[in-house]
Amino acid sequence: MLMNGFDNGVLPLLGFAMLGLAVVAFVFALMAREDAYRAADKQTKTFWLVILGITVLVDFFLGMLFLEIAGLVASIVFFVDVRPALKQVSGGGRRSGGSSSDGPYGPYNGGR
Image (cartoon, rainbow, N blue to C red; front, top):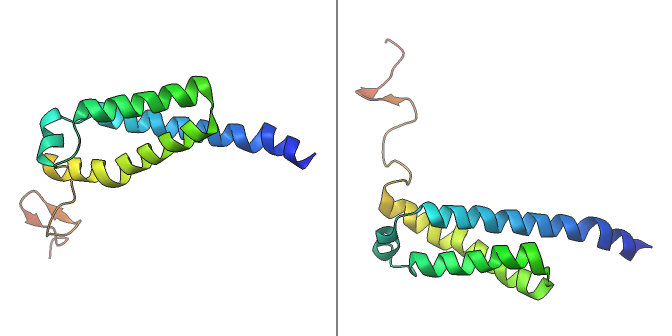
C-alpha cells in the first residue's frame, strides 16, 4: 500500500519537477548568445540545446527513470556551471563595488 501511494503520488511530482527544470534550462540555453558560449570556454550552444532538448523529450514522452536522471544531471550542470559563466561574459553577473542604495549618479544618502 505504501509503494502504491509512492508510485501514484511522489514519482509523478518528481517527474514534473525534472521536466520543469529541463524546460527552464532549455529556454535559458536558447536565449543565450552563441558567442557567449565560446567566450566562456564552454560547449557550443548547439550542444547544450541538443542535450537539453533530448532531456525535455525523454522527460515528457518516455518516462524512463535512468534517462530522466541523466537528463537531470545535464540540467544541473547547465545551471551550476554553464549559466553562471554565460552571465559573467555577457555582463549579466553581479555588479562589482557600490551598494544597493547607489543611484545613477553615486550613493544615495537620504538627503544628508
